[in-house]
Length: 220
Image (cartoon, rainbow, N blue to C red):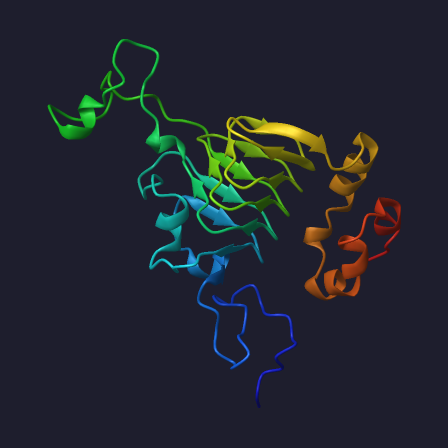
């Protein structure tokens, strides 16, 4: 039986978009289907795009996150990551609290453990649910991005980013809040990304619209 071209693809599909000729669009992937990395967690339906698809999506997005890194990268559900985005995790850090930032221990001269030229382990980098990260943005080590955030193209993002805010620039600053404080609380409670995919598609118009009260009134 041939596949329904209009059916919503499962989160386990590596290449969820089909081209007009029926072939898979190799430049768009559901990340949970293509990343098998012990320090990366990705929620269902979060996707990334690349004009030149990489052989290794984990290394493409987070090149400094190694199998032995102490920190983690956690990405929520339904995130949208544009071409050129780079997530710089804590293993890329150097010490900058002393005279020199040179990582002598990386190159030898003894065991790495406890060497004074290396910084202590950094915190995890977390990206919430339904986050859109624009082209060529950079996410700095330990950044905490809330749900529903939009990151402008080329932004350099660090620190704590409030949920449902729009950030842009270098260093990135909050341009505006996308919803009022009460609406943000409501959206956090609704957490539509945890609904079954059939329910999400049923209420697509509300999820993509601006009526928070109507979305909150959905009885699932």
